[in-house]
Length: 303
Image (cartoon, rainbow, N blue to C red; front, side, top):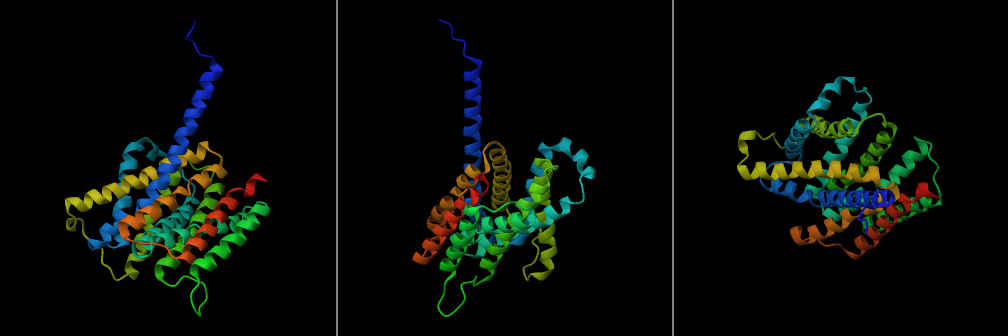
């Protein structure tokens, strides 16, 4: 009896293996983003602001990735100037997200950030001229209701009440704008987009530094444990970037969007056990509606 396998069976196995790796990539990327706030808080407790720690961690990430992709540096001067927009918008998105999760309640920040599908639908409709289907309109309505319930307060408008929540909201808008710019920048490679994002964080952080009252920390301030924490953050950033990109490239967008909601589960568990944070009933209801809206939004282009 022959042990040789049918070529079709081999192809199916390879496809299944790729699919499993892609799912793992998305889930692990979501895991990274769901816990990355904690080491940043450790740095903040050591007296290093989120802006300063972002500068250092993204420099480490760029150095590590630059060594791995050394051959790609030759094409850096051939990149179009339009990459500057991706650089600045994505830079603000990542920096404002980090600043929000350092000082704010993790789950409120996460959920305000996850209003991003709402902004993506609106931007895609008016900028990319993409058709908004019924599921898209449902997502917009449900996400708005969820946000209003989560942000409700006595005798006041249901809007963010502190800097962290405003930063989270702006990060979600920035993330949506980043997605739209990325769609229009299909001519850029994964490496170019990744480096643009990382460099963008450093550039935006340096631009913001003069307007904050926390000073820049000299490298000599850090002890071995600080460098270790920042190294871990840099590795999380690299893993989140490349594994998510790997997954998104091999799984349809709808499934990928739903899988990435795993980040909220990770953040909820981590914030409960690591920061003793819990959600109120209104936050749970509003948050559930925002998650449902995100799922509806992911089906907008499948009608």
